[in-house]
Length: 492
Image (cartoon, rainbow, N blue to C red; front, top):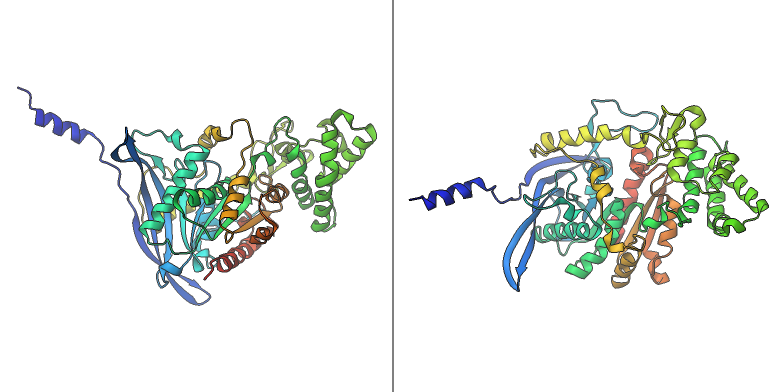
């Protein structure tokens, strides 16, 4: 007769154990202006669960994902009154490593910059400019980035889309806020690149779903309407909105002589706001004389030849520009940061083979974090830390926006109207060729909010690129700007 109990025991033992939070707590100190700050770090994965209801019957909370985060809290502060900032990067498919070790965290990686990239084997340093001085910090890696993964038996792709991403990151924010008794703390979200899209949508989602109102949003390299940067047939908008950035990059590489950058940008912005959109809209109706004038102006601003500008019919696609500008020198500029250059082995390529503004610094960030998380934060995990997953990026779903542009302008507008205390800080890099500053300005100008709420938006500009903190002067100034924003928006 079969041993039923033995079979059941064997079956139970063969099943993986239910996932559990694996947070590790460590204690640290940091000296800021002769003041020693004691802080606690907590790092690891938090299990994200979903309520299951079948035919009206509650059947429990099912594990859906294990989300990696790192939090920093100051030891000698009153938690209830201290601000907390939830930070993430973008991609989609990027971990939070960039904001974590580049700008906001108490430790930072030394990556070097355009003229002095750091060589391996890299190093970490204390960050006395850390935002931790003014706000507790929580860095979140969305599912399939960092050490975050879907739970056993769950599909990772279920999290790779606009709405599920907002819901899962929003749930982590709610959980951390509740478990750490921080509902009465001033709360902020900080996003970079696609993270700004996420941040704006989260402001509305957290209000509508949980009644969790934010004090402020930090938009670093902002893109709230993907149509403003998407070079698709029939969408002429990006061809104008990128021109000031092209002009800035051309200026950096010597195409405007000794003219001040501000003067070049003023001319580029004026042309991009008026004459170029008109010329593009005319299509075949544009006269030969008007086209010749537009070609000459656009070529002068961008540093490209009139022949090239004429051949592309006044429509300079951004990766083409970074490939074309220094072609005669066998070089290409960076996309994330147009100050960077690298060799192009194929002089006939239409699109550059490498973005130096990523490849020159990612090694430092990878080495820095993989050491830091294990040696200093004492978190052990054999999974690869996914810094930037192009697989996730390419598979990302925008099904919510079928037939229309991906935009969170309405979400941010409604969040600001419902919460008139909500402040927005926007950080722009003049050499950011991924999310150009003029496009972001254009989109923000179309928020559907009353004029008095526009006073809630402040802006800061830096002589750097997408990750403007790679440039040391910009990093120091940006740290001051963010600290001032947190202080002024905390209502305490």
